Image 1 (cartoon, rainbow, N blue to C red):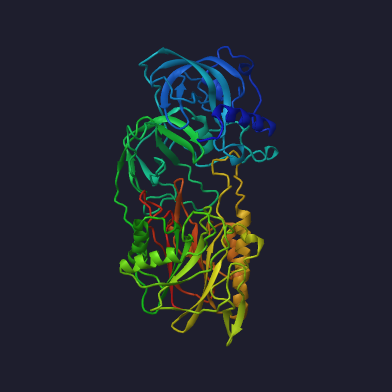
Image 2 (cartoon, rainbow, N blue to C red; image 1 turned 90 degrees about the vertical axis):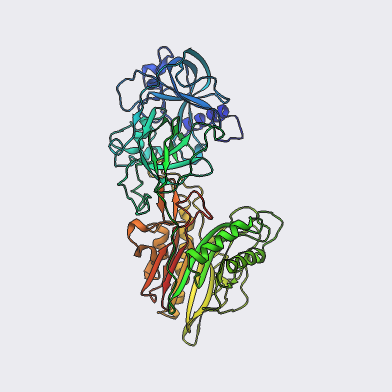
Length: 611
């Protein structure tokens, strides 16, 4: 939990800000008025906020259950004799700021200040972690047994996710009494800092470079055939998900590699933490063993002679400074896993020197290396079309100037060039020989519209396949940055980023309606990294008035995903079709998101149809 100021100072600032905002409960018990005889459950209290927040406590007793000597340094300790109240945790984190001098099994007395630390800061919307800061620690004895772990299982975690927040407190659940038998978030909060365990559990989020993975303790909760857990609505958050991190430094115990569908076998045990990236996390003092279940990367079928295959692939900030291995791996995916589609819309193609911020906006070198790699992998000699963005106007990695690009196989499909398109000039719709046509091809859709501020503008192109015109619109909508997480103290969480995507969707929908007003049966394909779910307001706005259909909804609900985030398999990448495309085959080709070894963090999508 990196910070530009000492964490103790950050804690004080967080507590002060939260008190001012009315998000922290005041002292409500006699224990809050005195430091004499305070125990851990008195500090934790029966809500998310300690009744002793901001106060000094002395000689709080417990047994050390976990030590973290890296990152946010400190240790957890637990009272072996609880109060019998399921709402009050018996464990607590002690933030030392430097490598702790205690060991697991030490009986300790801790004095210090009770604080509520919000990982990511108050503006993140995250819940807070109750802890003792600026501690004075006395070791009373060593070698004591660790309090027996609480087993987290399908039986113990409630099916409902969280209570509705208090409208008078901005939707916050902070002051609500915990109901661990009713809500999953309340259940996990009631165990904050407690020694917990999970038995053999299916991996639903692959291991990452941050040495973490996600498991589910509910194997029957919204599963898919590849082992993941599908996020299918805002009210199906998947309560059984839990993040697992190792407390041991990686130099001492390398973190295992795991893909979705693998099983974390044996016993994984340690204190339950709360962090900025995912919330409740089992800090594993004892880590189970990953059992490889042999997940394979998918391969879609080749298109038939009369079928047009159109794909979208977010290639994750591809630029010439990337190693050749990345170009080669992405190229093999296009050829071997996607069966060399006729048209490929790429997202996150960076300019010719990547993140170097020197005014460069061209991407010819990036695309030359990529298309050459495709040929070397046995694929077609793709041609390409794009529009260079204005410098630093489209968001993404600073200096990278990401944009969408069309690759197309000239042996199967032709591109209709209508010159004049640039970063600021909008393409429109015209009637040519009774058919809809673009005024500029390639061209950008409404680039001056406020919906695209600091975001990628849609790229439209006109193609011809077997004599039939197909208009394709490649998109990369605004990211979810700024949204509150599922474990926010506000329930439901604030999804502020949806505002821009909703406006972007309306602009694209209007453009498609303009096409259909000229030619009712026009073949229009809208695709790309939409950065939103198939059930979202964004998708509803895209499909408004029947102008488009979200093709991913043709799949069974359990197969609708292109991305895995915090153990939830979910839709971000989409292909949408106009009514003229009556029959199609859709495939979300799972080659990245479920794997620890990723060439991109997105899975590509392929649509095949007969124009």
